Length: 311
Ligand SMILES: Cc1cc2nc3c(=O)[nH]c(=O)nc-3n(C[C@H](O)[C@H](O)[C@H](O)COP(=O)(O)OP(=O)(O)OC[C@H]3O[C@@H](n4cnc5c(N)ncnc54)[C@H](O)[C@@H]3O)c2cc1C
Ligand SMILES: *[C@@H]1O[C@H](CO)[C@@H](O)[C@H](O)[C@H]1NC(C)=O
Ligand SMILES: *[C@@H]1O[C@H](CO)[C@@H](O)[C@H](O)[C@H]1NC(C)=O
Ligand SMILES: *[C@@H]1O[C@H](CO)[C@@H](O)[C@H](O)[C@H]1NC(C)=O
Ligand SMILES: *[C@@H]1O[C@H](CO)[C@@H](O)[C@H](O)[C@H]1NC(C)=O
Ligand SMILES: *[C@@H]1O[C@H](CO)[C@@H](O)[C@H](O)[C@H]1NC(C)=O
Ligand SMILES: *[C@@H]1O[C@H](CO)[C@@H](O)[C@H](O)[C@H]1NC(C)=O
Ligand SMILES: *[C@@H]1O[C@H](CO)[C@@H](O)[C@H](O)[C@H]1NC(C)=O
Image (cartoon, rainbow, N blue to C red; front, side):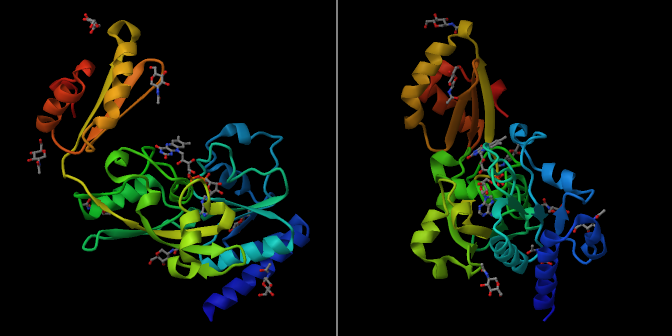
C-alpha cells in the first residue's frame, strides 16, 4: 500500500514538474526527495557529482531536464514510463565514468536516472557470492568483500571509484583478469527493469538478454540493471604488488619487446601491465614474494625484479 501510494505521488509529481513552471513547483518538491530540476539549488552539484570527463560538462553542453535519484525500484519504473510519455531520453548513471559522457550528456532532451542511492551490497561468504546494486563503486564492493572474508575477491577494475552498473555491463578487467576473466564473466544473475518497466531476473529475461547485458556496454540498450549477483573467487590472504619503472636508458624498449613474448605464458596468478612513455610495469601476484621471485627469474629475468621492490 505504502509503495503504490508513493509511486503514484511520484508519477504525479514527475508529470507536474515537466508540465509547469519552476517557481510553482517549490510547494510540491518537498513531498519527494527524488527529483531535481534546474531551479533546485542542488541540481548543479548533483549533475556534476560523478562527471569524470569534463569535456562533456561545459556551459554549452545540453543539460538534463530532470535528474531523478530513485530510492525504490518503482521509482525507476515510473521514471521510464513518464520519460516515454514526455518524449525524453533516459540516461542511466551509476559511477559516471563513461569516457564518452553517455550517462550524463545527450544531444536531445533527456532525463538522468542516477542510481546514487542504489548501492547496497550483501556478501554471502558461505556460498561465495554477493548481490551488489549498480550504484555501488568497485571500492565499496572490494571493501565489503574484504570486510567479510580476506580469502574471497572479485575480478574487476583497478580504479575504485568506477560504478558497478557501467562496469559490469561493459566487461570490466583488472588484476585478477588472467586467472578469473572479466567481471561480466562472473555475473550469475541480474535484476533488470526492461524498457516497458517490467522487473526481470535471469530466468524471466532469458539467456539471450542475460548475455547481452554483460559486456560491450550493452546494459543501457536494454533497460536499467538494478543489481547483480556475482560469483566471488578464492584469493590468498597475502598478495604481493610491485611496480618497476624502466626508462629508455635502462633498456625499456628491449624489456617491453621481451615482455610481449613472455606475458601470455606467465603463471595465471601473476598480472603485469605497462603504460606511459616510461615503461611502467604495475603488478599484482596472488601469493608471497618467496614464490614470486623465482617465478620472475624463470619467466622474465630482464625486468630485474628484486625483493626490495615487492610489497
Ligand atoms: C579513471 C577511470 C579508470 C578506469 N579503469 C578501468 C579499469 O581498471 N578496468 C576497466 O575495465 N575499465 C576501467 N574504466 C572504464 C569503466 O569501467 C567504464 O567506463 C564503465 O562503463 C564505467 O561504469 P560507471 O558505472 O562508472 O559509468 P557510467 O558513466 O555511469 O555508465 C557507463 C555506461 O553504462 C550505462 N549504465 C550505467 N549504469 C547502468 C545500469 N545500472 N543499467 C544500465 N546501463 C547502465 C550508462 O548509461 C553508460 O552508457 C575506467 C574509467 C575511468 C574513467
Ligand atoms: C531540491 O530537490 C530536492 C529533491 O527533490 C528537495 O528535497 C529539496 O527540497 C529541493 N531544494 C530546493 C531548494 O528546491
Ligand atoms: C505508463 O503507465 C500507465 C499506467 O500504469 C500505462 O497505462 C502506460 O501504458 C505506461 N506507459 C508506458 C510507456 O509504459
Ligand atoms: C538498502 O538496504 C536497506 C536496508 O536493508 C533498505 O532499507 C533500503 O531500501 C535498500 N536500498 C535500496 C535502494 O534497495
Ligand atoms: C567491517 O566494517 C565495519 C563497518 O565499517 C567495521 O566496523 C569493522 O571493523 C569491519 N570489519 C573488518 C573485519 O574489516
Ligand atoms: C601474511 O604476511 C604476514 C606478514 O608478512 C605474515 O605474518 C603472515 O604469516 C602471512 N600469512 C599467510 C597466511 O601467509
Ligand atoms: C641493457 O642491455 C644490455 C645488453 O643486454 C646490457 O649489457 C646492459 O647492462 C643493460 N643495461 C641496463 C641498464 O640494464
Ligand atoms: C607500454 O609502454 C610503452 C612505452 O613505454 C607504450 O608505447 C605502450 O603503449 C604501452 N602499452 C600499454 C598497453 O599500455
